[in-house]
Length: 315
Image (cartoon, rainbow, N blue to C red; front, side, top):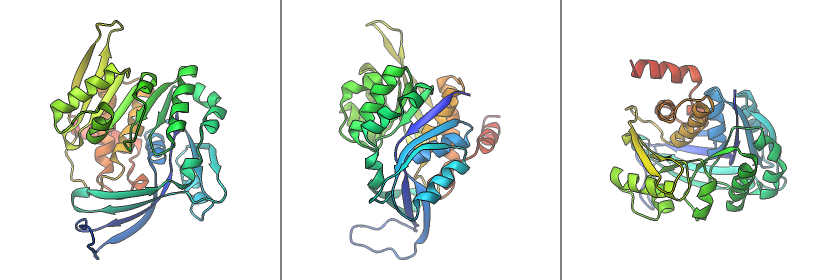
């Protein structure tokens, strides 16, 4: 099976679920507390591994009581952890999460050891990137590190899936080195530098991002599904094909890592050779399963559950 290397963040998640999210200055005292592990990179690596992918994870953790358990959990899911380093004098990344009605959430992250993942560390694992079909990255790590990932992947001919999350300043000229870009509506608006408040505006943003150099742009629309914008042809007269893939309707409990589950499972489906539209259906099914459980990594489904869900919903 084709290899996937996920490069990115890992976090200790401190989460509270409550009947509704508080307003500024308000206390809501009926919360249920849970401590789990998250981080966009780690979530995507776990989701990909549980979906059947052959996954290596490149990451930095801190010198804290949670770090060993976090790495052990990755290994238990079959993830290659040989490129995870323990950084001295710093905590692992930490996230504070409040989950309210319909799975809506507030989220704040302290990057900690995630910002010790430097460009030099990426250059040092160039052989691992070269040996993989896909490299998956997000934006919870240093911008210069993401740029180095794109540079090394271009040199080695490895396809890059970039989940532009969270939205931050980014040199759009670098999109020419991204094969598949995954963004939600606010992220698409930031990167395309235009309003995205409905499907038509999302399509326009997706087209503009393809024109900047991506082969594929996927704009996730939450309950409205996904827009797929793909480059057709190789000449200056290229056109962009746009397709819509509906979401699977479910009752959401916690949407915290739905996008991460989607990206990790999308990478697996593409690595297995599925056409893009079928790969997105697979990723959408995994995301639908994930939002029905609490927690980031605890909610990532296993391959058997995804296949069973698809068999039931697509009969």
